[in-house]
Picture 1: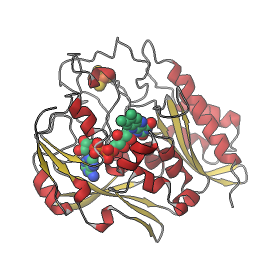
Picture 2: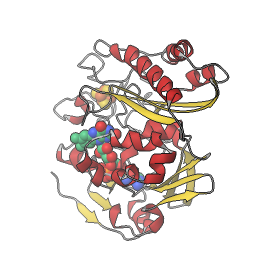
Picture 3: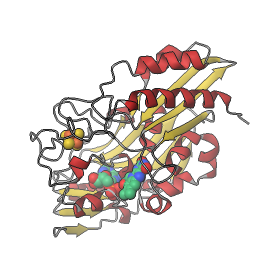
Picture 4: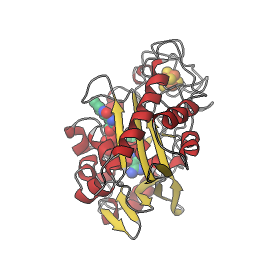
Length: 338
Ligand SMILES: Cc1cc2nc3c(=O)[nH]c(=O)nc-3n(C[C@H](O)[C@H](O)[C@H](O)COP(=O)(O)OP(=O)(O)OC[C@H]3O[C@@H](n4cnc5c(N)ncnc54)[C@H](O)[C@@H]3O)c2cc1C
Ligand code: SF4
């Protein structure tokens, strides 16, 4: 591991000042915020990330970054809340199962104790060619170098939102739930506070896969905002190679509002199949106003994956992604809501 300067600011404004200009979530940025460090330190040990300054944000005392607050019509979740803390919150378990189920099925309890929600949404792809610097071709790690995964071992790579420059999977479990709930992200930068739709936080790879988010240099995520009231008829279904401590091969975060068997509203986020947390808007559009059953759910899943582009080893993700979406929808319909 390379030497680096360690900073431990005690307030958010100082962290932003330390990080301005040089800090960003880009892999090559010379300064990086550190939450739990479970992605950052991992990638520094592998020499994939080489920051010269690490700004520890867990020392920030601003209360709002550490709290889960019930608001008039939803939740404000501080970005320094740990995965474990949110996963165990009784009112969130009752009112937003989509949020807590996507957390407890992620990583391991030890990691969830360490990892913070701000860092969680900015976790990096698990693409082996990205994580192993002995491979010279990786546009995300070395812009313009090519993509070894296109014709390499791509079983774990994305089929939605891909480009000819990168097919890396967005691996996280919580972000598909946030995108389904139309969450907003609150950020603090040198020019003040702003909020953006969570759906606009992650960028498609297109020709610049090394630019993963729409955050400006130095911008710090301070909170996640969920509006629109409780979503009790919601869940997260994750399919993986083993039942614990594995990333998703396909996942679906679903929240529905039913009028009898008719879909009044439906929100679907997909994981394990796309380059970004994927909102299945095409499927949602087909289901609204329809009776929800296996036929309508299958039609919607087929439509959502119509533009999927698979490679040699990941074609299974198209069928698995559809089946996971259908199962999640039907299980959400069958939930008994108190
Ligand atoms: C073995 C293993 C298995 C895993 N399995 C899963 C899994 O099954 N599902 C899953 O979803 N995840 C999984 N993960 C990933 C894990 O969830 C993430 O590593 C973790 O959530 C990242 O949070 P952190 O606080 O440690 O982030 P850090 O490592 O501290 O930060 C990650 C990145 O975000 C930036 N950052 C952090 N906080 C902020 C902020 N507030 N504002 C702006 N930038 C910020 C950092 O600069 C860094 O670039 C696994 C990880 C490991 C090591
Ligand atoms: S898929 Fe993306 S991250 Fe993986 S090798 Fe290609 S460019 Fe790099």
